[in-house]
Length: 288
Image (cartoon, rainbow, N blue to C red):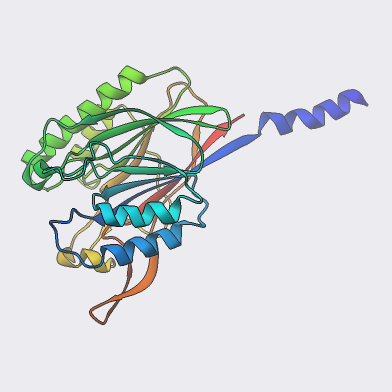
């Protein structure tokens, strides 16, 4: 009888798992030098929408605007009290911060932040880079590298992005630990349909890109996103969640592009999109 009970109990332990729910989202909160009266309205609505979500960690990109970020922080801190970033943020500085900001339900630690050496166009007036944090989720250690890479479409900017990725890879190699997965996510700004660029990005980062399963195809979709109205004919995948398993037993469950929406108005025009990008939610599954 004892043997029978043991055989029944063992599979329960063998297949027990913990699921980490992540969201990465470029929220289009540009610096104050860029005119946009909708920022505070959108910040309030974004916070209201995410406050009761199931996400454990949320990674924001383009969280440049201090007042909008303060609104988000104050509203989210009840459920997401552990907040890191943006990197290189100082009041009254000429150049902006990195724009990458992380909020979490459980303690996370900053490991390092690296500013990109190769930036051009408007990105020269930011401090874009990559921020590495460390977390321990129910006993499962992981690293998370959050970033927003060089923007713009021309090949000279793609070359700068490749340089950005090389810096990420060197940083991850430096802090690599056996059985500790490294998650790379954010707005990487490489178009997935350009396979020669996409393949090189994944190769430089030494990462795996899990398949995305959902009804939405693009993270930038000018056809259906009201705030991407200036590029209505452009549909691209620019945002990613990649990972390096590093001999860990972590796997990826659900990964999908999400349109997080809530009704608002500007100049008597109705909107529902809260950013010009859609987010990506991903479940990382740790076996106990």
